[in-house]
Amino acid sequence: MFERVKLICSKENIKISDDVAHEIVNLSDGGLRNCISLLDQVNSYCDGEITIDDVHEINGSINYRFILEFIDDIINGDIKNILSKIEIFSNSGKSIVKITEELLLYLRNILIYGINKDLIDNNYLYEKYSEVDNNTIMKIINELNSNINKIKESGDPKLALEIILIKIVS
Image (cartoon, rainbow, N blue to C red; front, side):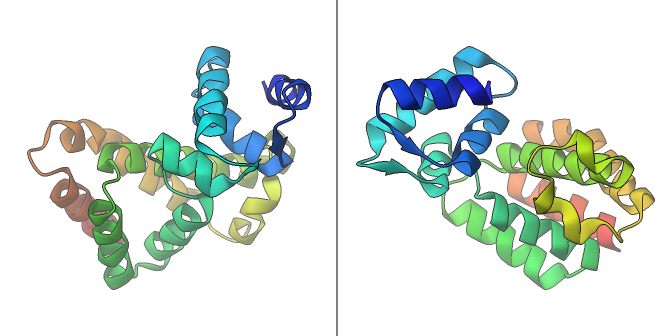
């Protein structure tokens, strides 16, 4: 899919970095049509070069750097920063469910990086997690995964995520 994105961009004279192309692929849930659709939407929105921020703005997702900072806060048990970031997500109109799904995706990548870094694209993003115990990552993944339906069905998804994360870090 990455190669297809790069080919389309080349043929359509769309300026895009490899990191941005990888982000579009990552956010497309494995579907080539989703990938091309997201590329088309972002290209229509942008003037000139497509940036990662443009991709996340159109997709309603969060920049990977911010997600990784959020994961750092969870691993470090920093409740204050966790609650602050959830508030920022909520106030900016981001979907709490989508954020939870992104957390799971990045946590999965951290886990796989810990097993075999060659299995992950953009593995340089996960180098700082090489010292984190895989059991810690598994605990966070299991808690989020087993509670994602509660977040989806909740009348207040923000509150549900806050409670789940407080439970995880406590």
